[in-house]
Length: 88
Image 1 (cartoon, helix red, strand yellow):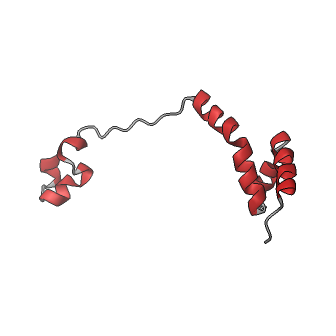
Image 2: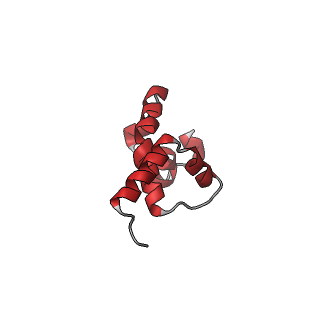
């Protein structure tokens, strides 16, 4: 595939940034975008997507509870040869 010239790329970038909905619809329907369309879609919508993520305040909380002390988790009885009755 031949790359688009600079003018054609700028026109496509402008089109996508003004109305990205048709491109997202095509992706949701399973249609593949041309590589240049996909790259420009990602580039032009990045700020809006990141802003949504930050406003939604998603985070990640990881806890290992009692398992973290010994580092073996629920497999401790298997690794140490402990019977089920003794473990419980």
